[in-house]
Amino acid sequence: MMLVPTDALRTELRRLIDERIPLLGTAAQTRFADAELDILLRTSAHINAAAATGWNLKASRAMSERGGLEKSSAGDEKHEFVSLEAYRDHCLAMAKVYADMVAGIGSRALEYSLPHVPGVKP
Image (cartoon, rainbow, N blue to C red; front, side, top):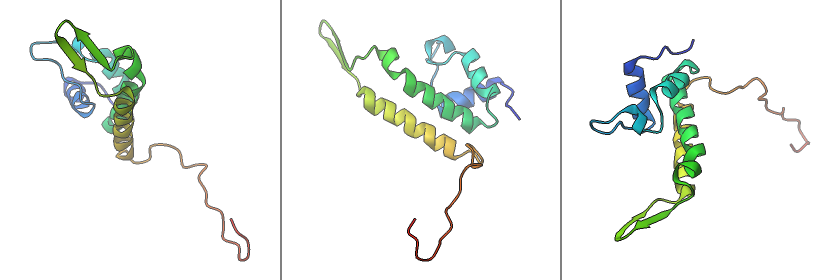
């Protein structure tokens, strides 16, 4: 069963992936437009699965969003960002947190344990 996007689900997904629409702003001022959130929701059976995908997308976009910049200055104004690696690692860790919340995510069809045979080391 896939999720049917609603305003409430979009709002909840934005909260889970730490994306806030600026005060008096629009969704266009965030990393994910409503249409993209709808795709995440329609292709997921659980909101946490959509959140995991959203965090993975944030990790994969880290370099292109900042153009590789870790520091920026214009005149007297200077900005120093968290390293791209730290940001990416945070996004991937959050993706794992949400993926782990979804029962049955991933396939266990090929998972097996070797039987213990006395006298034989695995």
